[in-house]
Image (cartoon, rainbow, N blue to C red):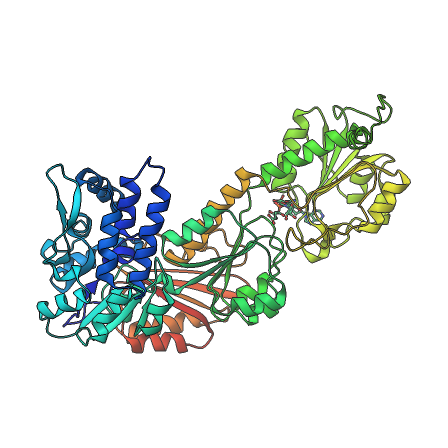
Length: 634
Ligand SMILES: NC(=O)c1ccc[n+]([C@@H]2O[C@H](COP(=O)([O-])OP(=O)(O)OC[C@H]3O[C@@H](n4cnc5c(N)ncnc54)[C@H](O)[C@@H]3O)[C@@H](O)[C@H]2O)c1
Ligand SMILES: O=C(O)CC[C@@H](O)C(=O)O
């Protein structure tokens, strides 16, 4: 951790919406009026008055008294409020308790809120009780709030300025807050800088007059080179999450203070080239293509999370060459795909889709013709990876005979029989199910030739990737009766959002189940993915571990403890490690741990060091020939 400057500034911190995420008085009203029919209306009135005061749109003193009049609270409500506020301390203040404790002599809370709820919350994080300056309530004999201490300067307009003048602080004084009255400390000349604090609320009028915007307390500490919990403030690191990934992902990044943008749909290449410029981590699903052109625009990008299994939508090699690690969720939705495939197979072999459609038209056609059991039938799996093998187990449990073809040598599960060629497999199967990955070479691997090789009346499933099948050839095979039923979940072109219509030659064909790429779209799978992928991305960002990456040399690292960690990504050419070690030696830096892994494009070196480093050393490493990317963790 960088050391504290010798003469730290005095730091004046606002409480409501800065030190905590919420406004204390608004919350007190909500607690006190619980159960009252007027609760929402009164809380809204109080919020409105709070906002007007914060934006400098009405006299603060007038607003405060109006709010107190509206409050119908007593001492027991304050106890409940304190319990609630303890859960609402701003994340970045929580993370920096050590700084607050170690520098308590230089830290003051100056607030127009009330000591009764500020002192218990702030002191828990190391703030001195006698450094909390705020209003005080007046109570009647029953403990009801009946007013405020009118003698307190903080209950008057310009109260914070008057208070700061009384404190007579000498040296640098920095004010941090979300409101206009915090800015006035700077305007009055009593504070040398004003930081508009935007972690909880952004007030454009306040931000417009600020010297700096502090997106978090880490950001403030970083700006002032003060000791802090994050080497680089995460609030400065932008995460772009596309395609409506599970909210768990949003929470995972927000909890650690990242600046997260959440977009429901996918973006096309042009939009993405623009939006990705200041993004460090991007999360996508199957509809966003991260092409070479997108990567050329992604100057800050460090990691890509594919919130799915498939990664064919990402130019993996280009990403690796640029030092960008890609992670996916290889198993989180496997079971969901298998269940959909099994369900479709049973419905199709029984001709249920046609019967159901007829029933909707009023046709009652009770007949067994063309309806079969799956028991005893042969299922042929093309691609025997995670999904293929799991489907193999379930199909066998249904009494089916399993055949598979995979271009890689695979161990049979249960009684599954391996076929040596695709042709052999297609000739034997009653049900053909595709589970290959989406690499380019698999484009239209199933076309007219392959359909002709299949048994007459075959059931055909594609829940892998759309481009693997020649759609006109499939449509013709259905029309001719060669394929008796088909389940198709993936398409060569898929709408970018739910607002776009779906066009396909397969529409309207009999006994064809069309689904909008939902093989992996179950609540269970999406939630699993929403935890798994951020976990991988955060490990990479916080610790340097690349274990599970699909394009990066995989390194699983011990947790960083009491040392600095240097992460160096370089072109995989001979001699880089030797040159890097030379720089360490020259700068007299002791290495406590070193890890190196390479792949065909890049080398990834991780070095743990036990000593502070200099800017010159960092510069030398950055300038080392072959360096693609370099970062430091502590
Ligand atoms: N519909 C959905 O929502 C959904 C959900 C999850 C996964 N998927 C897709 O399902 C597919 C399979 O997923 P997985 O987790 O089983 O992948 P996997 O990588 O574990 O397995 C794919 C298997 O296909 C084999 N293969 C690739 N090309 C082949 C070829 N030409 N001939 C024979 N074998 C070939 C590979 O060797 C591998 O064993 C992927 O395309 C994935 O994107 C779709
Ligand atoms: O959720 C998605 O968009 C893709 C799901 C699936 O195709 C996958 O690759 O996991």
